[in-house]
Image (cartoon, rainbow, N blue to C red; front, side, top):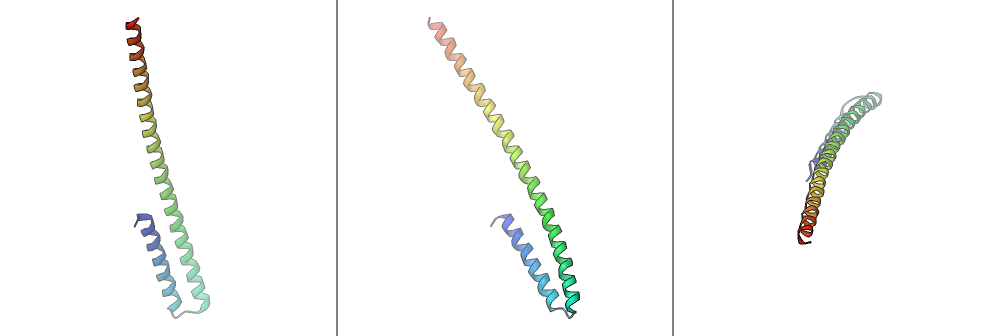
Length: 95
C-alpha cells in the first residue's frame, strides 16, 4: 500500500470516528451541526495543508528528475560530439 493511500485511509477513518462520536453525543441538533461544521472546516484545512505539501514534494521530484535528465543529455551530446571528432580525425589521417 502506498503512503498516499494509507494517509487518505487514515484521514477518512479519523473523520468517520469524529462524526460517529459527535452523532452519538448527547447534544441538541443545533450544537451537533455546529460541531460537525467546525470539524469539517478543521479537516478541510488539514487536507489543504497536505495537498500543498504533496504538491511541493512533487515539484521537487520533477525538478530533480529534470536536472538529472538534462545532465545525462549533456553527457550524451558531449560523447557523440567526441566520437564524431575522433571519427573525423581518423578519416583525415587516412587521406
